[in-house]
Length: 478
Ligand code: G3H
Image (cartoon, rainbow, N blue to C red; front, side, top):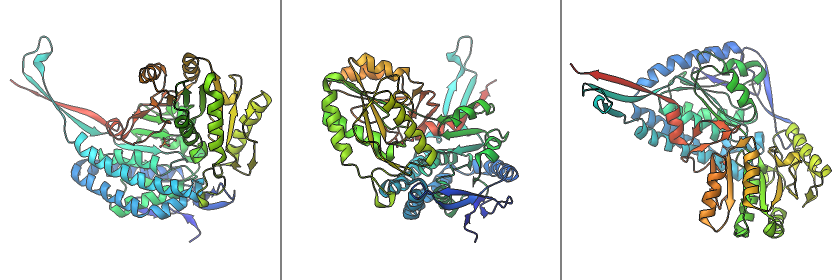
């Protein structure tokens, strides 16, 4: 055709009546690579209405049948691993191996969700009235979990497939319908993922995928009166959405400034390996990346040396070659990162490597002796630049972590488990990892951020529960 990928509505692939398209820029070449439809508000309206209708009969479809379809989609996702991964390489410059892992992890997430769903949703509660003062045993209460309706799923560019299915699968198993708005970069990978659900044979209109410009359809989607729940992962846009959305449940996973606290009794080799993996995998473009190292002065030199040695071994180049460090997602992102680097240079940070950039490709950079007056101490670069702040007590580290407006995850390295637990209790973050880098997975663990890092909790069981409402029926005996 005209080379513009179609959007998905009413179980069919369609062209937008706008006649317009949105280009997807390959971060490595900075040239347009794909095009997707620029959908209109009328098209959004139509697919949301269809989602409402399709949801009614889907909610009556036996749970085991819903699970069966999800298992089919999961198997298809794994079969389509190669083309999905290829899109991720071209659209978001994800290293080839990580791109393939994302597809497989997504298939696993969908099947786990189907299995968990049949258990979580397959049982309810039975209560009697005489446990509350003044009541006889004349009321029997039955509880069940019912779907919310239409779920709007908005995943971010860094996991356009995995963070889409982490919303889609819990929504569907619980009897909801799905309207997916993928990020522009990653949209074609997401369309391919939706194709797997299409092939699995879900009813028409139950799942739709709308592409286009946020300026045209963003608010229209998030403020639509027929949307019953929004599950969003991304940046500041989430804060704006939460202010504009109606009286509906919101699941938000926003930014992070995950701190890594290193005590003087830490296993420094383990810490260094986790700092490099946590700070630089996918070039630091993960909400759970290590974004600030807070190390005790007594071991700081030794730690920085070990981290430097590992950074030197990172390969820098193209995602097709499976390089460790690949171009960041957009030129504006690269410019933002550079701004943080320049600021830290002016304010006297120690550069452990020379700063180097070619196009969107930024070489990994460790900044030592960072101080609180530098922007990099607080802001999220979402790139391969990692600040190190030297501390003289664990309290100082905890204080820096808690002074952040973010509260996603954090980690602490020490051989003293009691100390680690006390520090975990004191850190105001949704998760604290002891002796490992922050990470969302395994995907059935609860995943949540405090403060500006989010609303609600994810992880398979929590998402299923969040996308349902309790319904009770009370039997009144004579
Ligand atoms: O970017 C945000 C993701 O939820 C992080 O997931 O820890 O598996 O990279 P991850």
